[in-house]
Image (cartoon, rainbow, N blue to C red; front, side, top):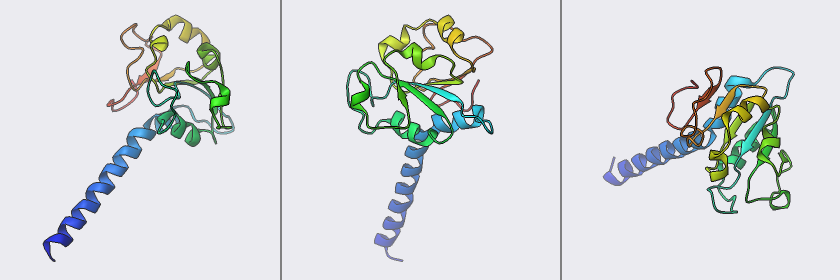
Length: 165
């Protein structure tokens, strides 16, 4: 085997590794939701906060939220909010877009926060607990962590966390 063949095989293995890592990093919120709240004969409600790929933009190009919504839509009712967007900005039909973040949260089995908008940091934990039916909060960027301690009955998980706690 010549050295260029070896380099090519290594490059392919590295590419495959990075591609699978990227896919895992992008889709882990939907996997956590599916593992923790999916029940037979029921379509649990998932609230999604933040659809843009980062705060202070209207761009949804490469948005992990939209990728996860597409994956979850078959088994979950998705209610989404983003302060920079309106329903007309989106061409996704598999979700209900709400103008109010708390409306998206009402009666939800799970909350997933995909964008670290400042307005999400200001939400009071008691309001979240009153409005949610379920107890799973997926907060990849620790938006809620700095402002309050979550109730012991809540499960929360974040990026680089091995499991829901």
